Image (cartoon, rainbow, N blue to C red; front, side, top):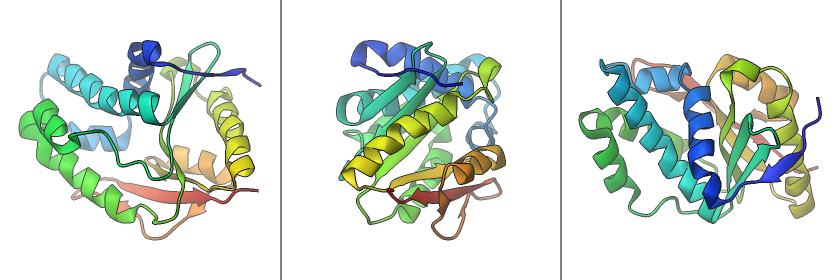
Length: 195
């Protein structure tokens, strides 16, 4: 498969957020974040708002790319990005009593983030019904051309063994120790140098 890749705009926010939420609903890290949530409706609302913070930030300050059919999206944060405004306060308001787990994730990811100037792949998301059909590969290949042109590495945190395998096939290697969540899953910080 070889998809046409398009650049998303702020008008695509709701669609992109929905793709990310659905793609990550069964992810090990999402499961750990929501382990104590009992109401599915509240869980869906919370994660929709949570992912929306990153989507809106990437649409305004980074690059959000999608397959032309809308089934796959990639959120890239650019070098020197300082993250969403008032991030901690917004996360606390969105996550409420569940904030400690979200804060634990953020602090561990921040500690593992390289000091190098990188394009950070915050989320690569494909609709559950069409995964393993090349959408993720096409999105990565498209952005890797930008990395090569600019001479900047790509960085990400793989959040599941299946994702890690994809990234390894695409030229990413581990940057160091895993990101281990308390009594939870591990994530793999990975980097790909420009060609």
